[in-house]
Length: 168
Image (tube, rainbow, N blue to C red; front, top):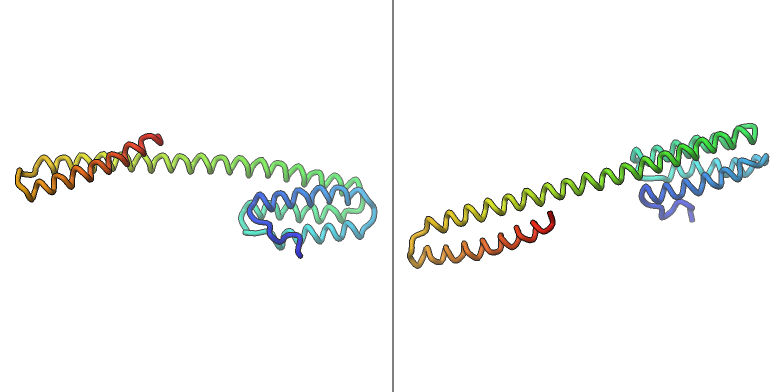
């Protein structure tokens, strides 16, 4: 089974990259080339497997790519310095993603609120129009039935308007 199987969403890919960066730091402190090559391959696999190919995922891929390259530098100091820089970039990026997610949540709530207000206003207009129609009806049996239907409809629309008003 591929270590990237089952990872979904930006949070899943972010968590996976974070664990790969932690492992890369440990491996970078050694002189043995083989573990560094294997880790570099895993980071490259991360780039190949991460999806969907959104701007956020591409930023994570860039960190993985730079870390994979850093593992192949010639000295331990250079490797650790480069991976530490990538980890710092990863932390900054995580903070940026969290901030954007919060902003998106606020925008969605604002849109929802605007739609509720528009529906309440529309319901008010409907009730007013129905009441005007009822006032224009004559006192005969046929129009009396229409007046009853208007009353029933107004009651339902009023209930909707009232319940939506509670959400504001």
